[in-house]
Amino acid sequence: MSKQGLRFARENPHIVEAARSFILEFDSVPDPVVKVASLAEDENSQIAWVLLGSVIFQNLSFFQMASVLEALFNAFPNKKLWETPVPKASDIKAVVQKALKKESWALLDHAPGMFWSVGFFIRRHFPLNIWLTSRNEAEIWRDLGEIYFMGKKNIRPKVMSAIHRLKSNSPLGLGLTIREGKSKLPFPISMGSRRFMGFIGPGKEDDFANWTPEKKIIEVNDFYKILSPMAIDKAAHGLSFFLEPGEKDFLCREQIKSCEKCPLYSECSYGRP
Image (cartoon, rainbow, N blue to C red):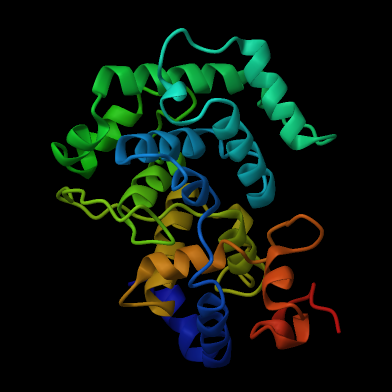
């Protein structure tokens, strides 16, 4: 366990308790990717749409992500994600652009490649439920590197997210069984968790932004354990909503209805009466 996190918890028990209460506010709020994937008709389709959602979830807010993925699902439902002939690039981009309305997305031109790559992966490893149960986390980690834009480096947040979405219980994930490898897979660092760590948590006084990626993964996951020792996934999930942009306001403000009712109100510089 991180000495820095433990020291912060010892010196700031009120923040730890407030963060725990904040996490509980989102205990039943579904992950945006899992929410859309759960609409799919069967287990293989649900796994497939989790993979697509995980790979395109970059430089998009939760609200934008949900809008884009749902639009793609409605346009190319269930098996259309991997069946041939594949959709035209122009059709995929048109769906994404319409979902984002006037918002820009730096990865728009890569969206067709991501879609096609996930489809190719599915055709190669189908049926996905058999593929999933025949491998441990390390092997799934390796396989998912085949997907365009899923990541190739040692720290692969999209792969981490995909695996946790597959194995976590509802509403955080699909609740599927995955064999663990020799080492436990850490949770990725959401933008909400980054904001919490840098604005309020252990990274506030230690310039969180300048920590190495390796240090961030270790420190954030250790703090998840402090906040929720028996269910680390709930801490990772709950903090992901912290100051996350929603449709009209921050998602945390939309969920809790009032900043003054938020457990973190007294510590949050964005809180308002």
